[in-house]
Length: 130
Image 1 (cartoon, rainbow, N blue to C red):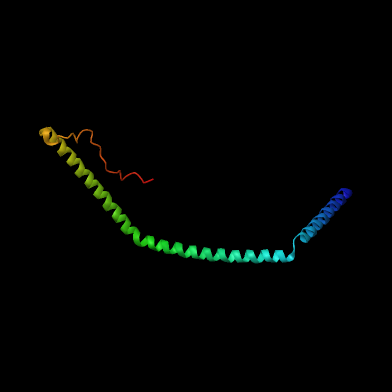
Image 2 (image 1 turned 90 degrees about the vertical axis):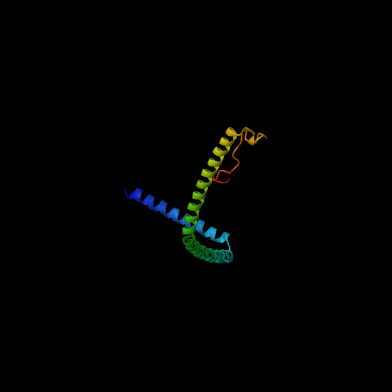
């Protein structure tokens, strides 16, 4: 048991020595000036990112205030437009039925055949734009 413990200790010491040697060799691969230059660049980039983050935070707060100001108007206008669309749909339905009655009563009222296969050319306002 004692020899086994001694072997583990010896193995740990050799691993530690190898790690220290690799660390020392890595330290000689890169110049200290280069490392300091990299640290300065990282510090500069971090400062710029913090400034950008502050600007974006202020913009988000401003956008939130603006949205709060206009959301009521926007909602009211959407309701108004939906009501107008409903009214116009009703009007066009009535016009189509009046035209059908006119054609039935006076077949010569539209002699050019403009009523055959009449297609509603109005855009569908319910579908989103591409």
